[in-house]
Length: 464
Image (cartoon, rainbow, N blue to C red):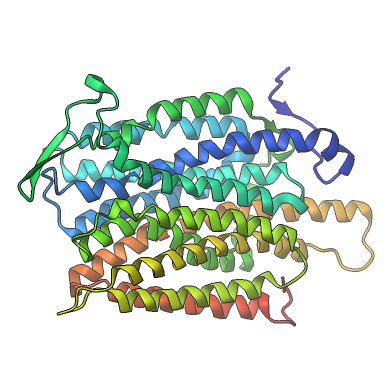
């Protein structure tokens, strides 16, 4: 008998949840979180690596460097569509183990590639695409955890999983100055790279950006295999999940979540290089990690706060105000940028970006809180429904909400592509990043309008 396969899972039954469900669900959650942290760290490796490539001899243009930060988002978006749907097919434990172990490939590849300045640019592009494996893991992780928790606790659990997982970006960017400055692996880690800067010889082990994660990835994969569970009740055929493609709500949620999570991960990937280009005297890795940290923390605290206040106010109206706040923050960023004859205001630039990250993190929590509510209303039986009909409606709502969360996360991962690529294109064409920022403002305006029209109006059919 497979002790890791759970054949009976009834989280909505209070006695089952209290006696055994709560313990098992939280066990899987707390094993999932470190795996997701590592996935985000690997996904964002290039946000750190590109800052140092020109220093150690790689002759790439600003646009080429932004391409390297953008491509992990493109591949992760494609992978997330399938990753979310594969959890019910293979089981959460099995797929978490496989997907986490796959992170060894880009981490090893980058560690080897950056040690040789003759490594071709197409090879670097391929390694950037492979980092999308980390981004893909988010969709399967969230889909898996959503199955373990009852409706009342789903938003809190997903907020914890996503929020702490998001902190992998801050970990990558915050720990990089430390691990890149020391030969952590001795002779096994290779020789350092050196260059002259302002007459001083600088030394760095850029390969550690990839190598440092290898033992942690291996340990997390083993922990998932021996500690997590597969739920037989969630093993749903692929064809039954793709019904969400026909749901208008699926595409609306995708659009809104691209505005929050896409912003969070896109700005996280872009900010170090953007600081390096716009404020040349500032070391970006001393500041950039604060953004993902604030965004991840805002998501965790926001999910917890929303769970405590559930039903007391309109989450959709809060989402509208979040997008408005992000518009104001972008206007502040534009005003703080260097202009012809002006060095810019880094303090204001940095403060406004921190506000953007906070808004994106809270927006992520709000939208994930909205999705189960929307699909519960969508599947609510009319009139006096039987107990069997109510149970069937709950199962359908949970299944579709889980699939939508995974699919929306796939679309939102495109933020990691569009945001860096927008900055790269804007700089290549105009010499300034302003055009990209105005494009983001226009997008947030559409998010305000759609949220109000479909979910925030008092007479909206799916008001939440």
